[in-house]
Image 1 (cartoon, rainbow, N blue to C red):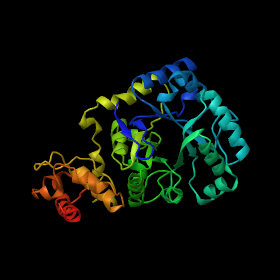
Image 2: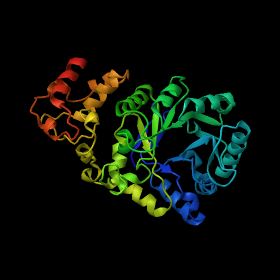
Image 3: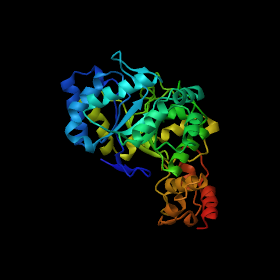
Image 4: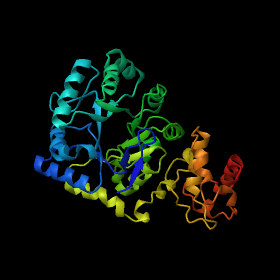
Length: 364
């Protein structure tokens, strides 16, 4: 397993996590087996916005003995009183649900307590007006919630919440369809979405990725907005390459799904390569480096994707980005303008010219 360190919390989080999806439909024995297998193979992060109430009991059974080795995202606003998922901002309902979730999970604390699924200003206003935010903050003050998160599909709302300074973790839907304005949750322009990812990186807010496959649409040529299917591993790598991302949370149902997910770790670079996107993304979003490193290997030895990433982050206000850039063995100034990266870039970035721009910015 590969892990990334959360800049704000210091937590060491597996790059592959568990989206609970429809695991509640799986018989308990099979579900618990799958969860145990995931933990034994290094997965330590899980989201608990699940489709069905039985999921919480499954997690309690699977992880009670290793609770301190797992990180849970628990949502203050997800309602399972009917046995199925529901959404609410009613304070008393949420209090009952959190007590019930903790009991089912066999734990007395929540790693990341999430402001749940806010996509409009009115949602955010209701969340505060009804006292839910104060309740979540009180839980943190008492130590029952360790960190505060937000789940959203809307960059503008996410930015507004980030402005409060309360948010440690953002759960956001990142995939090529949404980033390029295809799908029900394709909120915000491509540049607006990338600006959000960069802001999270700059401010140390971790991102956990939901809907990496666009609800499965990207995996089928018949439903893909691009008319061509991507693989799970291409979608996962696409999300992991975005600034701020710590972990990707595909939905799992059973042991077969977990094994398929873990296969990403041994997949070849070719199996993870999503540069095919450059052939069918809209012209108005090309010309921007997405750090895919399809331009590698650079004849001069530059890590072109990482150089671009540090530059973009520095320009977005990340005070540590310049230091990271300075530690690179080869800086942008080492570019010999051979044009290799320009020819290979699937997103049509003029990388040779950009290297000059970056070298001038950092002075090296």
